[in-house]
Length: 474
Ligand code: GLU
Image 1 (spheres, rainbow, N blue to C red):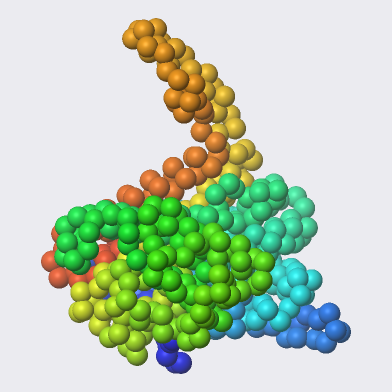
Image 2 (image 1 turned 135 degrees about the vertical axis):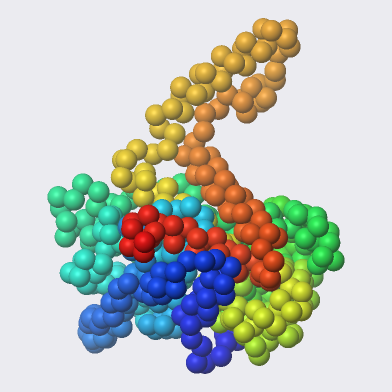
């Protein structure tokens, strides 16, 4: 599926975005240098014994980009594409992402260079537990220091192993369970974390297409109804993004995966495709649709919105001139390279940037961390009280007006908020506000050509203020 250039320097691209944004600010240059650097980089190797009795030496990383706020936060990626440059870039993006959506963390990222498909779940558990132990030895994990989460190739299962290993090494740490987010519900996870990134992608795209004047410029109608979408990647983020977009009336006409793609101009049913994948191990063969063998070519298909939801370096100078989408929604981190972006923007394509669009995951991770520190689920204390209070209000309205409501009307009003309601409401609030703040910067500052630059300006200003308030750069 990979369409990218081989010697791609992702971290350089992220630094260039900061430099470009910095031209629209007047922070001291030394402060900008400090913000751009990765504060701590830990590269290590450790052995694991495979099920057949062999030993494999595993290459791994944890990078903490910015300590302007603690803990630092960011996922752990399991992929053969992992390298130091990649993890540095992803860690830096986390700092800018958190600042942009008002999540009070610095940025970090972890990576383990493995092909998850060649290991059994027992082997993956040994890799994950040993990786965690190595982080503990160097103080690179902890609820007050550095809090990992899922990323490409990892999920709630790995997070449970990390939490358990950390707790075993720190039996007296009362906040131990807050050392990682994205855990299963039974292990102090939070309702809505699995869907969070996809839900955030949906909210971000919905906000963008709901601005009629911006859509007019792209020669598109306002709203999601009938928008033709191609997804690249159908993992947790791709699937949930597609599901919410489809529920809002968009047509998912193509899904590109690493082993091939599906295309149907009438729209695929994403839930059925997911069920088929769960049964057979692949999206291919769904309803006997012809497989698109070269799935990378699907990035170039005719559509309204293209959503790369897999890895970085997918839209490069090689294919940017051939992209036919009017909007690119970066659900993945870094799917469009800096040079490709210049070509795309020149061609009038709107890019909704990663540091904004996929920030829903870390937003809900923040809520999970808060839940872990407070040891109480959201809504637990006040749900019943609110329900009773709402009931009294309904009763008073009925008495005052002489009208009685139907049971379903009453239930819709009186029901107190569940944890999931509250999580989704917080997520929506963060994503909607951040989009309009980015758009405002984009419209107000003359010379800003990309939403990405506007997003970096907003982040940079917030991080700079936080350093300046520390008095480090008087
Ligand atoms: N890996 C996700 C990201 O890139 C989530 C990070 C988190 O929840 O800490 O944003």
